[in-house]
Image (cartoon, rainbow, N blue to C red):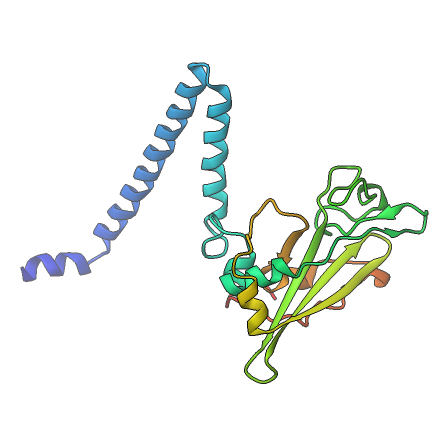
Amino acid sequence: MKKGLAGWGKSGRERGAASVEHVGLVALVALLLVGVVAAVVAGGEVKAGRDLAGTIGKRLTCGPRLPDACRHHPLVPAYGWPLARLVRALDPPPLARPGPSGLPLAPVDFRRCRRESCAVAAGPHLTASGRRTTAFTEVVDRRDSLGWVEITYWLYRPTLGWERLVRRGSDADIAAASGTAVLLGDDPALVPLETLPGRNHYDFPAAERPPWQWRVDARYPGWSS
């Protein structure tokens, strides 16, 4: 028994072998998945094959993100279920505002749209270029001291900059929102600033600089602030 234990501590060879085995196992699983997708597509189930490939891709890419990011709306890991439901229940209508050209501009995700042309409203929840209306959220829980939760919705419209809308909710409001669905496909899209990677390092023109930059605390240690 002692000899076996000493063998583990000499040069780490067993650890190296385990690492190689793990890599080989991951590669084997990947090959098997590719084979399954290929078989499904070859059998004529092209749509099913695409759906399966999309699911696999999503699982691979969402793994390094927030806890439960593969299964839940970003509001949930950021705030927990009760507050996530409240944030969704109180979200403001994404109203369009006239831009410099006179065209109605909807609030959009600044990471994907920075020009008037992609923010022109074409309905209650979409732009003419197919962009979803979006609100960035910030939550401060003051129930212990003041008895309410403050939710700030930050709306960005290219060339117009940022609009700040504030809602407050009590424990009674949280209870009333307990049946609210929190779904990825709901509009407007809601993006919690507390868990948005690199939020303080995006470049904006001076007139569009976010008032929240460098002022929102990260929810998870290690995330970019």
